[in-house]
Image (cartoon, rainbow, N blue to C red; front, side):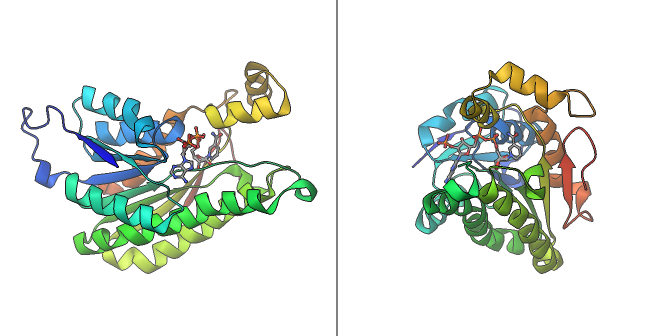
Length: 266
Ligand code: NAP
């Protein structure tokens, strides 16, 4: 299920026993990969979790090539047994996880009247059930350490987006989930915050462009024309925000939703 790749950390004199361990779900590519690399650069050991372990190899290699520690893990965040096995393995092979980035996500866009129940369920299961199962499995390590950081990926679609009744409901749900986590876990030194990205250039938005039949470059240009900073977002824009929430100094920031969209959102 997993492949451990430790790098030159021992040679560099890094005390691995002091290193915090983060799990980033959906980290094979896109936003998750960028977050994994940024947190590794900030000194954390990273469990690079995605559906298929083989798909995590590039992210793991990028981290270890840069001198970090990473473990590729194959798991389905919406499956209880898969999550339990993955978290146990990570704790054993990499260290007790006290940072969790619930990033894994899918879209199954359609207008309400054409949406099959299976597409509603699939989106709910990956985003909401997945974040619930992962956080429930990891919180025990955070509580024991009296330190934890949970960062959940919401979206500007939480405010409503045509063709995304399932996704927007899930991403709005992530915000309520985040706020409740912050209330329940705060006294254990655990913060929970959400990032709500706008348009970020990844395979997810490329797939949306393909679905609506618009070349990706045109799709991005149209999006950028509506964004105050006049560009679409990049995965690193989200990684930098996640790194702030995860940082030691952000312990008094909890239950927040930050829109990272190149302009104001309510
Ligand atoms: P992406 O490129 O599609 O990457 C998502 C990753 O999640 C993929 O590697 C995917 O694996 C993995 N994944 C899907 N289902 C999973 C499951 N059940 N268990 C484990 N991993 C799973 O997406 P992205 O654009 O980087 O988006 C990352 C997050 O940001 C998502 O939550 C998304 O909703 C959110 N977001 C993105 C944007 C944007 O503009 N891109 C905007 C707002 C919010 P497979 O390839 O095997 O399916």
